[in-house]
Image 1 (cartoon, rainbow, N blue to C red):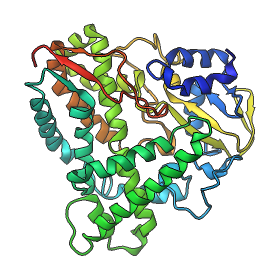
Image 2: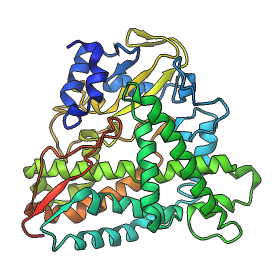
Image 3: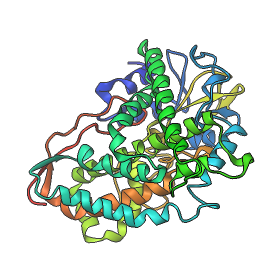
Image 4: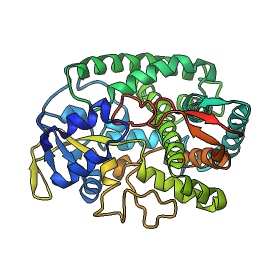
Length: 403
């Protein structure tokens, strides 16, 4: 097989359990590898890191030469796929009720609730002979947390889970004829989910609670208010991003530890290594593997010119395993030093919810690690989600000796 088929092979579902040999092939093929479909793959750490910080590279799909016919110039997009200054404005407004400087204690105040919820979920597994780590633990933990933060009724989870699945599927980089249909259904799901969240927010206008939807809709300063369309897109983004990647982080983390019993025992003996272990998991098995970009000019990347508007795909997970940046990169080492990974992206689009994800992952793994010695994987590799961009097991069935 030739290097110009790498994207097709990386996104092939058959490769989902282990794409890392393909990432090594990508790095060996060059710093920029043009694909048969006209896209350009970048899989080396230093080039990816530079591009994440380069203002000549856009996240807005409307700058691409190949346009989505259903995407209009006037459509309100989430700030995740907007450039500055629109991105800066919306991200700043979204941050006001979430973190510093206006709400510095919001996330930290959740620590107790997260610890309590984690304990309840672990206790619920105690008498189970077998359970699915995703459905019974890794999914309900971040979903409940983000619901509490936003003010979304937890009982509505089945409704927004369906919307979330469709939106996430539409965000994949997988090429092919199905992409247009995924985009159409994803946009429709975003509209329906946005309408639901705006309706929730409107119910709190003039009667605010402690949640973020209340804060958005009751902002007293007209200059700091989100429009109805902006509120819809921002709330959808926060609800989906607030749990999807954390589910992957926790599930990939447990799977990695069960595959490395020596390191699991090391963490059991020395819980002080846990913060570093979470960072190593973000490097070794990141929740997000691929990110799309579009050059705004003809862009020279390590001697290769990527023409303006042609698709640029940053293979984050490959950069995290680049031997040009990390020593012994295919080894999982919870005590790794100098671990400036790309697990949360970089630049102006550095993950908004990284502090919360770290707290949730540390709480989850801290509660599970003392109990993982008695469990075994029912299936390895487990069944994975279809998405190549947000890579993680769809289920992780575990058999219990004694919890």
